[in-house]
Length: 348
Ligand code: MRU
Image 1 (tube, rainbow, N blue to C red):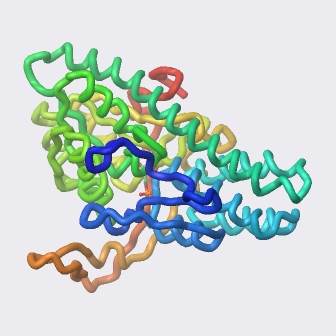
Image 2 (image 1 turned 135 degrees about the horizontal axis):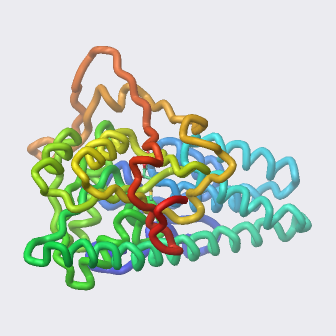
C-alpha cells in the first residue's frame, strides 16, 4: 500500500513486539492517526467499534488480540475466554473466526510458557500470507482487466466498486482493489467509480483515500447512481470484496452490494467478487445461513465530517426511526466470477 508516498502495511507489530499498530479508520481521510493496541480489550474495542475493519483485517487484528491475551493469561481458560471475546466482536466476516481458529490450533498443544510467542508468530504469518494472497488476487485480476481493456482500447477501463475492500481492509493491496492497483501500475488506464457506501461511507472516505494515495483516477458516486451508469455503458465491470462466501457461492458483502449485482446482471455488466481462501466458508451452506450484523440506527441518522472551517461536526440526517443491517447477500447466480489467489473461478 502507498500512504503519503511511502510503501507500508496497514497493520504491524509495535517496536517492542508486544502490541500492534493500526490506522484508526474512524478519522480517515481527514486525519492519519496510527494507534497502538496493547491488550485484548483494546483489540476487541478496535474491531467492534470499527477503528479497524474489513474481513481480512479484522482477522489479523483478532489474531494479535489473542496473542496479547495469552501474554497475560496463557491457561486453557484464558485462551477460551479471549477467543470468546474476540469472536463475538463482529459476526459476519468469516475471516475473524478463521484467524482465531488458526492461532488457537497453533498454541493449544504447547505448554503455557510458549503460547504467547507462538500466537504472535502465527499472527505474523497470517499477515504475511494475507499480503501474498491479495497480491496473487491482483495478478489474476490484472489479466482479467487487461482482457477487458483490450475490448475498448481507446478509452479508460471503468470499474465500479462498493465499500472498501482495499488495503485498509487487508494487510496490503486489498482484494477488490488489488487488480486495480496492479492494472494502474501496468499502465492500463483504469478509472474507478466509487460507491459512497452509506451509512458509514467506506467508499467515499476510505476507498477514495486509498485511490488518491495511489494516484488512480476515480469518481465518488452516490450509491444510487451505479444503475444509470451501467445502463449508459459507463461501467466495464464491477469488482467487490466479500466478508463470506458460502459453499454454494453466495456472497455476503456490505449492504448495497446485492443491488449492484442486480443492476449489473440486468445490463450485462460482469460482476466479480475478489476473495482469498480465508473468506470462503464451506461449512455454511448458503447466504441465508450467515448472521447479518445489525449496527446502530445512529449510523443511518447521523453524518460526521469536517465543516467548512475544518471542525469535525456531526449533523442529523433524520430523526425518524432507522434500520441498519450492515451486509447483504448476493446470490451466486449473479456472480460472473470469483477472483482468487488461484485464478478467476466461474464457480466456487
Ligand atoms: O463493515 P465493514 O466496513 O467491515 O465491511 C467491509 C466490507 O464489506 C468489505 O467489502 C469486505 O470486508 C471485504 S474486505 C477485503
